Image (tube, rainbow, N blue to C red; front, side, top):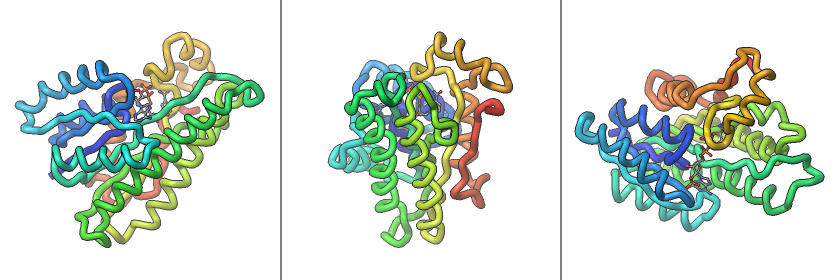
Length: 247
Ligand code: NAP
């Protein structure tokens, strides 16, 4: 039984992880916040695998920065699929690009709340259900960090970089905290990946900074995600896998 909940699974990296996981026999719950059309479209794409691979796929609206919505998200996912065995924390935002001295408090707060607090709340909800200490069967948590966590993103969004550094610390700390409770916790730190978060005009500016001189694809992140979710990475926990074309 492989029941995977992907926050921010309706678009971008989360969507590609959902599509690849479905082809590898995972039941999928994709979460989204404010764009039901994108979630519906991804659900339709997943539907082609439900018959072929015998899997279930559902979509659930919830804001990961809300404690009550996160609880409802997990309860709804478990009602639809059964016990959640795998969690990917992909929901994330950057806020408007600027220097810190021009950034709004609202953007800074929202980015920290969705990225850092959202990851902590979802990881907490997962541990409460997965940990053998709480009668669970164990599981796997995978967080989406960013190369920004170590680059700092000057002139772009250092609050976003700070939120991702918080995700790195969460990954390392939680991996050690639950290592004997059947749960592995890892992160992927992508560089520039072509999604709505990094649109083509932005990529043109940043590609020269990448040693491999190109952006990454969501499929390249999904391939690594599937490895970290699977038993092939049984001895890997607390790892932060940088996938950034050498950056
Ligand atoms: P994206 O294409 O912009 O998709 C973001 C996803 O997050 C959407 O499904 C969105 O749902 C969801 N979301 C946003 N706010 C949410 C909230 N409060 N609660 C629940 N879901 C929410 O982003 P992406 O590029 O795939 O990025 C995915 C993750 O990878 C993020 O954590 C990002 O920081 C990280 N990352 C991305 C890049 C990159 O270059 N793309 C690089 C490094 C790290 P709605 O559509 O409903 O709003």
